Length: 117
Length: 112
Image (spheres, rainbow over the protein chains, first blue to last red):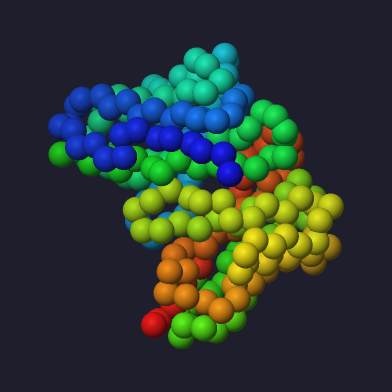
């Protein structure tokens, strides 16, 4: 299957700093990428849909100024957690849908564990 | 609103058993259904994708079926192994550009 690479896999930061997580589709072009957050022993919560060349669409309750998403190319989307606080500590996972063929199949990255001290 | 249910939340079986994981969804107007595996602290690995026009898909020891009219899918794992221990999630996709709706997953433990 297609490969989605996510970096970094783990990051620890101090409260008040900003953290950037990258999501790359390695062997296909992705017009749409998705960012999820997962709490311990819970299912995935969709945070936002990222479309190449346009603004992201955020789910209800997700602060767009807190979680900045940029999808500048067909292979890269970034999530920046701004002024991170301990409650932002979580597992963040991105996914990408291949633009061709459009079967609708989603491929996921390995996830990024964020710990805010 | 689409809702996806996976019951039970956890399952423990001895090695070698054939087992069935169930998934149900409320809105039968789906585009496709996807089964994933998630290991602790890891991302999701796509196991099988079933398009709405298909009734089943097979990959190795895994077989997934889809019955749209009844809103159900099953993931069949043959001859289970300890390495199959993981959380299995099913997700439905209800349109060409809409979101994936996930179940909460079934945590499977296969005992040696």
